[in-house]
Image 1 (cartoon, rainbow, N blue to C red):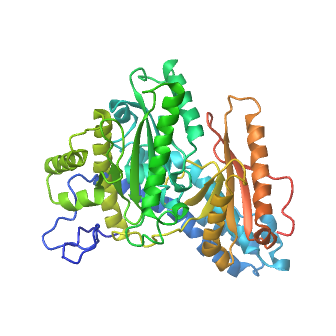
Image 2 (image 1 turned 180 degrees about the vertical axis):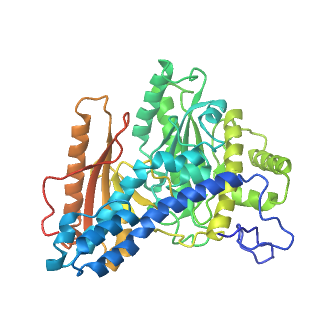
Image 3 (image 1 turned 180 degrees about the horizontal axis):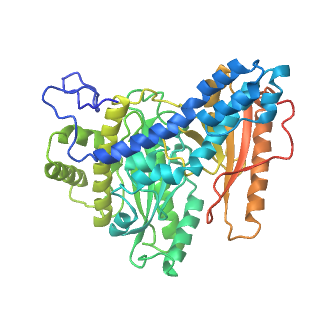
Length: 486
């Protein structure tokens, strides 16, 4: 863990760097150091659970010819991983050898489950510290914030880390490749929330509005290769595509429900090397110009060493300069200022704990989540997400994920772990059974789409369902059909 400021020599790269210039302070006045500490504890704990899998399995592998192998292996797994290994795989090892691919996938899936089961205790310390919470969002005039980031694993920590926004019942996140959210689906989501608001189902919603945010991403150190894969690592295309979706959503709602019905919209970019953000400031009519934005990395460099009061004044002036006399709505402006300030803490977090730039600027995920995301895992590069109802409609996203994991896992002889996950509502009769059937259809389709991997035991799927309105979270579904030859 290192604490650092900025490299200020003339040849310095245009981003925070992990070298302290002479006489320069190591900490920014607006950074929440305590929240950074709590988030680091959370990150270390969750990554530690996954990080211990390979080392534990290496020891298990070395023990497989010992007479008391099964007992020793299970004791080791319970002590190091927090769960047991499949007994049949251990008991048959003396005949066929250990199936390390199956064991590794089992450990990944059960570590996911362990993290979800412990999410309340793991996340409580930082959730209670977040400045941008439900109360603040309502004070800005919004009853709902609907966020569509790119599904890239590097944005999986978007809410608590990058935006420092507390997950709550009024914030919804649905990721799509390239931030290309489903406009028709979002119109339906907006209409449902509008119905809830008009029928009194949203406290204080009488005068509040709906905010839609699209989040694209880019790489400052390797823009041609580590940007958004869905847009060919072309930052301009990624920005324009996300903005087009926002404008299409506004037009769809205005055209369907009447002029003026459309929600506020906001476009945000994330430099995934540094977790810095750029916010594109809309004008008074809600229109967005891609060239009118404020960059938090620049704000950090300009304000480090200032008092908190002076730094806030500088940020306000920076937003005003971009507005150029056409100010956005007061509530949205207040939220933008809060997001820019909050992200300074994440910039310094990356400086303190990741040497100013992530060592792995590309993909380093542990598994693929296909279907609907497990929202409880809020951490960078924990999983690659393919949003889909059927494999056919999400084929491009799945193919990208498989390509990534051919490099991450298959080239090392490990299987690709795929969690097939869907939500259901316990308020709807038969919903759980239908969610299970969706899991089975998607699992079978994935195995059929990649027959070479499946036949070699290099692709392993685990099905799971979660209740939107109850306590069931990521419950594993046992398939009645055994994996032939695995």
